[in-house]
Image (cartoon, rainbow, N blue to C red; front, side):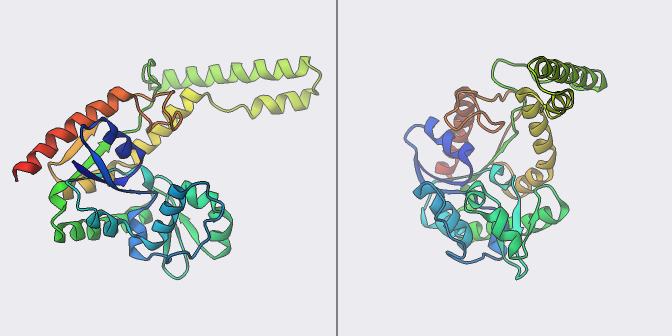
Length: 289
């Protein structure tokens, strides 16, 4: 089965659990929005990037080559996910766009984009959603014209809010107060240790005040925010791709041993296997069309 991916490592990693699959194209780190006005190939240097893959994604984003690459790969299945939309896009004064990807950041976009007069359109904002929904509609039409839309599968997969082996954090005012109280206690203990080790009282208190949330609290907060912001994006994709959608939310967990690191969108092998099984079931329908 030839698979084309328009999304992130979520879709790419699932392919490893699909028997006899071949990733014919992998378009990552590219927002649909850049198709409305690409900055142009090699407009920005990629010399600070560490791999050929990172360079290819960054250059591809500048060209907005997603649909071209998907179509030219002649896939049996196209997997689509929204994870790489999460960082927003840079909008330049001339009406062009660049995805605010990790690669763009490593290439220095956080410095040279504002210097060029660009502003960051945050994922979830009304302006970002308006541009994205328009751009994605156009891309869907292009896939449809190429006869490939019927082979597209949307992975409507929520971010996981807890590590494997942990329960999802409790919600509600009482639990929020409890978390805040525990955080204050941790700050107090840290400040007291610093003071006993010879730091000044002011310095010790400052260290305690700067203490951040725990990893578990960070994962839960980020997942909650991302899942809330992505809802209307996911609904828009589902309205265009209809019955070729995989929805998974409650059972997902973060794999702390994931090769890409612990993140709310890096799941357990069992989660990937479950998604792979659903993809295979939908793909079997394609062969009978």
